[in-house]
Length: 111
Length: 111
Image (cartoon, rainbow over all chains, first blue to last red; front, top):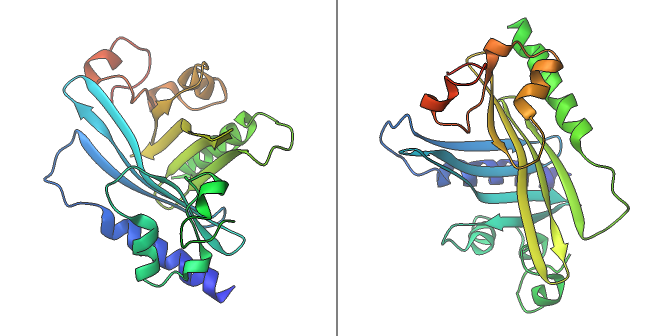
């Protein structure tokens, strides 16, 4: 339980640090979303480029059964690897956006 | 402030009720995400169809400056209209996924 609480804070800090500083632009918004009750965590980018809407979930992490699941990673960063480096135990790290059969080829957990 | 608290509950109930009941399928997950501290609310659908990953933010609502913003609606429902019907004041409802110039043509708030 204590480790899960640590993971909650680690994930929040990780996502917070991932928000690239941007000049004040009312058409651009980076949102940190933390639902600690349901253990869903996201980094969302949204706004307008002229009349064109953009909306993207850059990173989505969950904690399930004490493990950290990478549900989405639309960045060029090795999110799972970075989480291990900042102290998520590798066995507690599930690269969820690979199908289960392919996760076995990673060093991370399968479920 | 009291009205904003009402909106938080209304949004949560609205999204919760929007989760379609589905048979027990380990490859499908509907997530309700509620970040009351930052006032971001989402309904996310994710999982696997065979080896194919799907991930979709179906609805994303925010509360900003006391108003409810529809940031994303990937459903065939008239989310803004439904929110008004379940008692979000129309003037507090911003159809954020239309550019500001087009919002003036709706009956909802522009900002």
